[in-house]
Length: 206
Image (cartoon, rainbow, N blue to C red; front, side, top):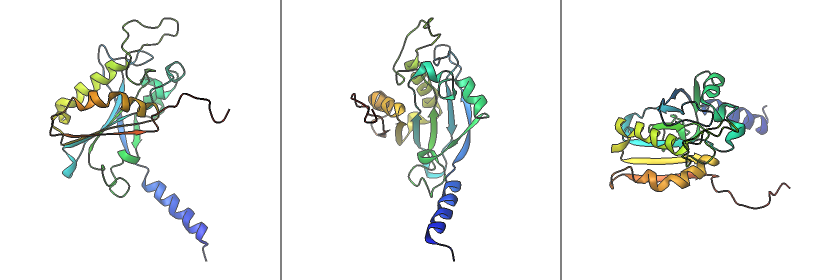
């Protein structure tokens, strides 16, 4: 007879497989002014809404810190992101289109903004940092992405959610008012900052 621990392990593995999410194609926004840290166009992934969620939008901001190191890896370079991920990424958690694991948002439009600018999509510097060969145009990335979304339906959303994790959570806090200003007064706009508040203090591991 299977032990309770074995049963729980099997159920956990099954659940993990179901909650693997759905793969979404990575696209590039080839804007003349919006550029990521390494100078390549910013990347995004879009999963259209369906059913009674077609008037609802969820915009997710990924990690955007430490651009000097991250521009060498998928988290900070669109070119490396696409080549490493084979052109697509899984939408999991609050981006999952499975109603069992994401009952509140599963059929919403889901738009994930990748990229690293080093300042939570707040920087707006025209000149390239020649010492490190970095571009700081995060604010332009954010604005260009919003301009892309509004005409295809987000401007008429009934519900809109801006969320992010870690440095993306900080970006959510910094952009919440600006995001809300995009919508009609009748649109319900909410924000979720997941581990996005950073305390200035000694690391507890030190």
